[in-house]
Image 1: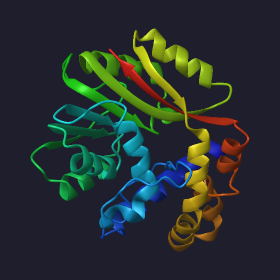
Image 2: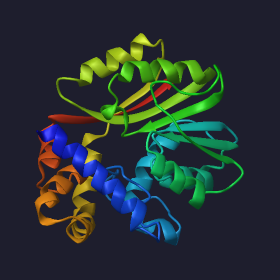
Image 3: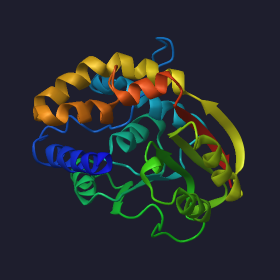
Length: 255
C-alpha cells in the first residue's frame, strides 16, 4: 500500500513540474548538502538552489572534471548539468533519465551544443564501452530494481582510469550490501565519505521553503506523503536520517 501511494505521488509530482512549472523553478530534486554554514560562492541566480547545488559541488570536486566528457545518470530536470557546465567547464555532458518528460524539459531549457539528453534505463545504458571520462549519479540508484546491474554498466561505459562519482542513501541494513555491490564491479575505492549529518543540516535549512511549495501544489491528503518524499524536518524520512536508520554516502571510484 505504501509503495502504491509513493508511486502515485511520483506521478503527481512529475505532472506538476511538467505542466505547471512554466518558469523552470524546480530544477533540482536532491536533499542537499550543508557544511556548518561554510557556503560556496554562487551566482545570484543559483542562490535559491544553494543546498542542492552544494551537493553537486561536493561531488564534482571529487576529481578534476574540467575538459572531460561527463555522463550523468538520473539527470532529472537538469539543474545539476546546468550547474556543472557553468562552474566546472567540462567538454561535454550527457544526461539520461527514465522519465520522458524530464528529458523533454532538459532539451528545451539546456540547448547548448555540449549537452546531450536521452531517455534511457540506468541498468542498460545505450553507450559503447569506454565512452566517458566521468559518470555521475546522485540520489537516484536507491530506486533502481537491480542497482548492481547499473554499477556494472557504469564500469563498462567508463574509460580506463575514469571515475564514478556516486552519492546516495540506503537504510542501515542495506549500506554494507551497497559497498559489496560496488566492489564486485571491480571499482577501486578512492574515497568514501559519510555525509549523513551534512544532508540532515541541509534538510533542516530548506524545510520552510519546501513546505510552502508542498502546501501550494498538493491536495491535503497528499501533503504528508509529499513531506516524506522531500524529507522535510519532522517527516519520517528526515527522522530516519537523524536516527541513522538511513545513511547517506559519497564515493569516488576509479575504473
